Amino acid sequence: MNILKGIRNGLCFFLVAGMVACGGEGAVEEEAAVEEPLVEEEVATAETWDENRFYTTFAATDYYETWDEDDDNFLSENEYYGGFYDTWDVNNDNQIDETEWNTAVNDWGLENQTWSEWDDDGDGILEEEEYNTAFAETGWYGEWDEDDDNLLSEEEYTGGVFSAWDENGDGVWDENEYGLYNTYYGV
Image 1 (cartoon, rainbow, N blue to C red):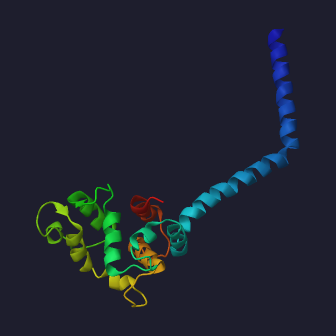
Image 2 (image 1 turned 120 degrees about the vertical axis):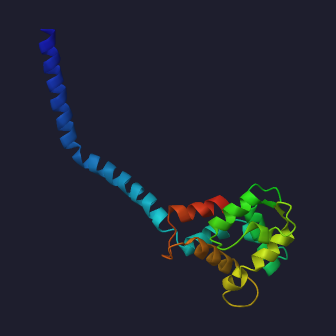
Image 3 (image 1 turned 180 degrees about the vertical axis):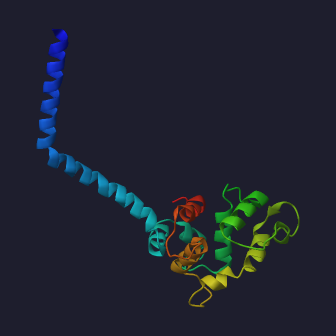
């Protein structure tokens, strides 16, 4: 008898739950509609990390202002190299060792570079002067200076960084390209 009551109660519960589910069909769809755009928005965020978004996000930090030692809102060639030196020094010990250099050269897409050409004195550490001399030979400062005024605006700087990491040239960073930004700027 108890088994029959349990089956009957179970069937009644199932029937009531089904009726509630049918009556609440719109509520279930609304809930799904609310959740679905959030998922789409997350995917769209990763797919729309373009140069403008990078510039806006980067401009909200104080990196550029910190590197702009003379506060003229532009980076001179020396300020540019100093900013890069600080960026490549990921452990913030005010020197670049061979491990940091190897990682950065790879991450920034610098080809045909050798540690020994950068580390002139062979002490295993890149002092800022050694770094500046070798980095100048990459020609990046001139390439990034779009208006050829021998000064880099923040927009020119971010455009250069964006292009350096947009490996496939599609104007959008994928997860790997964005990962480099997060590694060096951690914003």
